[in-house]
Image (cartoon, rainbow, N blue to C red; front, side):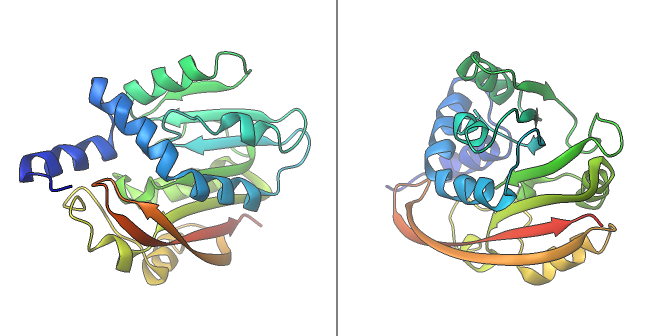
Length: 216
């Protein structure tokens, strides 16, 4: 499917912060195309009973039931910069005790040592102040807490037609540089490959990484 330059720019804008009716559709599409990355992230969190989980940029949060089913009495908190995704997540997950809030994308509105686990899937490209946000993640993580940042790799992303100025791409070097701005440590970089349909409708082989970070 060939998109015009205008359509490509609008798609990039919507991927960074879904808005309005088109944003709702983009959110549905992101949930579907990213589900394997999301489920891999949830698995890597190794959730235990009574854990508290913070997710940054949850989209429509169509994966929440799967996350909550991995252990008992999980406290889930979701933060979004997109008002459209915030409202969609609340509408889709009315039967849960999850808490959803809007935030500015830089300052996490929770106290120090609030969460056992933090996760974020395919949002790191759009962080407005990555060094600040990584130190905020460190701050709200409890000692021995784990954060999983999951992202499609730089070499894969740079060839996609809708990846423009709004994206900051990450490979191992960029992730190491980012984490070095905090006291978090990279525990493991898990590399995976999958066949997916891209946002423009093409079948592509996506390589992605789960960066498992620990707070000592």
